[in-house]
Length: 426
Image (tube, rainbow, N blue to C red; front, top):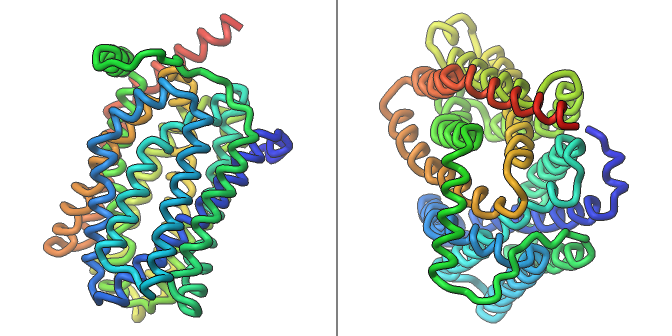
């Protein structure tokens, strides 16, 4: 990962704003879960809010992509961060006035921020390919992942300490400030104006541009394959991260809360190392091959993870120490390869999709992949309750492995031919 890219003003401003906003948002999300548990004693009630927050993405996502391609993306980012800051400020004022937030207020806050995010995320996705050269994309995406990992690592600890000492109010204040700081950083980023600058809005124009996005995806085998891989990964592998790690740790290995926290921390720490590893590998091999082998190895090591909760493996040891250490090591390796695969897939996507169409394409990709999240978590949640955990994990591994094997030849040939043509043209 070429950290010298941070000397570029636009990238450094983007990363500063991103880290600030991510810290505030992640701290608030973590604190809200603790707050709801505190006032209701029910984790399922906050889980309901998380599920509801996905609905705006599923309904508005494809529509939002058209508007992102129509309007100035820099203004979208600046105004939405300002608006998000104002929204959080209002709820902070409500908390200060009443001494608390009702469950309905918490739900409203989560849903409002989710609606804002529907437009914000596709707009911000286009910034890195817009301000960086094509040959810099892999390192820029690695830097982006690195900063995201730092935010994810620090925010739970900071939120836990602040919430324990002072409650929810200061975290709301920090988050609204983080949105304002992020908006300020975005004001000074020079983002090329690639929007269509629509003079007259009409349903016919919307329908035409929306259809244009669909036809672009339909005619791009690589984009379709990336969408299917993302869908399968969210359906099968995400539940292993969100449900499987906790289930195996607490229900099978019977580890302490601290030990389970170590597993979560190891996974996040692996994401800090991955961009550096990815950068070195991509210098030697094609991005498409690195993406393919990374996804394949995620499937392989998730399969290896299925051995840990198996009775034949557990019976080999007098205590859970060795299985626990084995799980730590495997989780670290899975974190490495899953992060590398995500960086490479994001870079392939950025190179394949024209910037003027990226809003429409990325929202469709996000909608398809996000739709698989609640379904996957629900189905695998049922499986973990009724099927041995090692079989649940093995099923997830096989789903990803079969998908990658099915696309092996087509994915590599599609990408390789494209890169050869680019080299000849150059």
